[in-house]
Image (tube, rainbow, N blue to C red):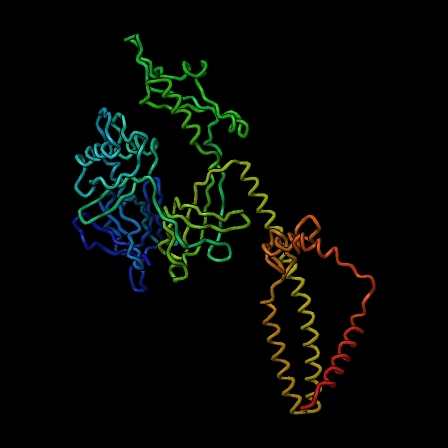
Length: 523
């Protein structure tokens, strides 16, 4: 499934294979890849003395690539970091390595101070990449790719300091405007895309009792802010000798009834007061600062909802349209968790040794704790319904088992009589009866247990048909029903003064018919 190749440098084109998906090839002792949508991908692996990579790997300079040989997709492209050597009590030696993807090349450079006004987001990112490219080797340089992230004015006002390039991009762009960094390796080098959205909605489903092995959910409300203190640019002190490390900043008191904070009353009612200050370095006007603070409160999420799943990659057996990819969206179905919705893969872990087992983190879904409680109650209700259904199935199967036991006993009695009487015809009849019993045993597992339907649950009929049936009512003289109200009014006017014997009426009709036929002229 996966081929792992190491390269002694950028000029080592062919490299050395240290893991092959084929039986006779090189093997890692262990190996896994962690792919994320909001950071740097990582990888770890372990080799032993017999592996071709033993003794030739050099930290930071040895490059590594992992290719899915089934799809041709490069699952990991990066460099090897620090090694860790170990020896077990049985005398086995091993080397363990951590790796990071090529996006980590942005950690190898630092920025230079600069002030940039009225330039687009793409232009600002180009400035950052220019600073980076001027400091690193050719294979670590990035070309500016697609930029789809925007803001209200499509321009930025930013300062650059002396932080490393990756942290600068994260602080100046990702943390403020959102979006995702995506690296593409093309024939002419590395490209860095800055995208507002990534991934697609896949036809592959992850479902309980199909490919879902285990699942856990984490609810994290710790990032919620119910009272925000927005702070703007620093205010220069009038005392030129002041050396305070902390300087005053623009606040919103002058435009907010002398209060320097904003409350979200809806969130306070649910979570209480949780205060946090947020700095907007490029804002100098209190009214603009208040607007930015209000936007922050409005756009923030409440409790983060993430799911850790282990599932079978059935695409390897062509049972699913495609494998699960980070950034893509998939329908996840688990009625006990109350989950039947489309979620995005924010982290995926690949097991190089056992590729069928895949772990993924799905999220982020943000909901209130009240919504979580409602979902939990629905899940418990579904669990109770499942228990009742299982109980009904057990009772049905038990009754059938009793009947089969009775039939089997009858067959045994007949077999005894056959052995004593040795009647060939009876032997054949009993053989046919045995076949029928075997077919009955097979049919038991396929017999569904139908329960009465409700308007929300299928049973002997569908829930939709049950709803229609419950909606049927008799007509009256003023309301429609099975009949129109006008027809019901006409029907009500029909009366019978005497009772009619329909059987006698039919007898008389047949007698009259016979008399008429007998009086017809003969041809």
